Each structure stands twice: as C-alpha cells, then as structure tokens.
Image (cartoon, rainbow, N blue to C red; front, side, top):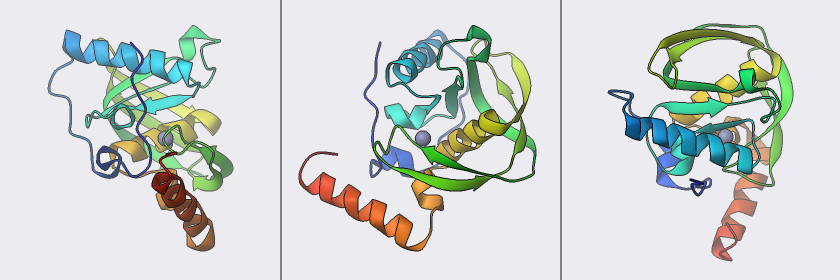
Length: 169
Ligand SMILES: [Zn+2]
C-alpha cells in the first residue's frame, strides 16, 4: 500500500524516532509499504518518519529497483564506523523541489536488523554511504535542510513557508 509522504514542518520529521521492539508482521507490512512508496516516488531512500511513523526503520535502493540486491531494509540501525568526506548535491522526498550540496563522510559501516529481524552489517561508500547518513539523520529528527547554513537555508525555509501559506506544501 502506498503511504502519503509527509513534508518538512510535520512534527514527526523533527523529533527522534523510537526503537522497534520486535519485527512483527505489522512492522513487515510497514516496511513493504515503505518500499512500494519509495519506488513510486521515485526515491533512493525512505525513513519511517517520512510516512508519519516515528520508528527507527528505513529502506533504500540506490538502483531505484533496477538491481534487487541493492534493496536494503534497516531496523534500529547504528553506525559502527564513518570516515572520509564527500560533497554532493542532495534532495529529500520530504522537501520536494529543493536540492543542496551537503558534506557527508565518504564511507560508513552500518549495523541493524533486516526485514526478517536478522542482524546485518553493511559497508558503504559513495552514494550508498550518503544515503545511509541521510536516512539516519531522519531517524534523529534531522533533514538535510537543517544541515545547511545561512542564506541557503533561509531561502529554502522562506519558500517552504510561502508554499505552506498558500496550501501548496
Ligand atoms: Zn530525506
């Protein structure tokens, strides 16, 4: 089932998500809905708060469905290691129409549970490492816009407020 994606300004996006107690069939249904919603958007990652659920879950697929092995689900993820630095342009399904260059570590090792509740550890670099960090930020209540500074951030927030006022956000 497709779920509506909430946008910058929705409370659930701006507070830390809670850990998942148990990977139940209900949680697996949520995960499957998130995967479907991510592909439909289309996007390369989606965190549970983006569909209005304040739980530590995200899904990602940097191939956007072209390579089945690239589809990853993380429940209660935590970084084991992060290093290096990359500067690339980034966007977010919860802030459609906006992009900005964000500094991120270039390599990351993430551990957590998969869709079946099994422990997994995934080492990532480049785009996947960026994606992990973007989604982990969502689980902390942070959006890429919050990582920007000065004029660039003000400009985006001003446009978001304007769109909100006219009911287009
Ligand atoms: Zn996002």
